[in-house]
Length: 179
Image (cartoon, rainbow, N blue to C red; front, top):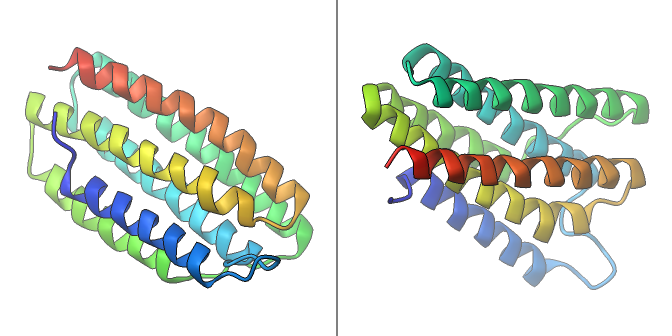
């Protein structure tokens, strides 16, 4: 199975982002602030909810639809928790180049997937979900969680990472079953 172009760009973009953060950050200061982290995490969740909604419209495969329903439900729930937390903390999520890149790349991927149908769509959606969760999980683990300064935000990101790691495993099983 090949990774979609979007997933490859996302992986490279988040990897470059993490490398840039490490190179630019003084030892004691985070490279990104909590408001930026919140925006990146929220944007990543919205992207997966949007992808799930598209899958629910396009796919007739029972397993793909069940996976998409799980993605929509879980990512919406985590984003709702994130919104409640930033409201409680009085933090306004701050748009940033990483969020913008994620959104732009996701729009291009959604357009590409929209042109597919049937099993070709199902396979491409599953492959993209595997690659996307790998990239987001790596960003959470390597950049966002270590950079988070607020304990509640860090805890929410850690909880999200555990959930999203299970999503990645589910996506891998789905992709394997569609071969």
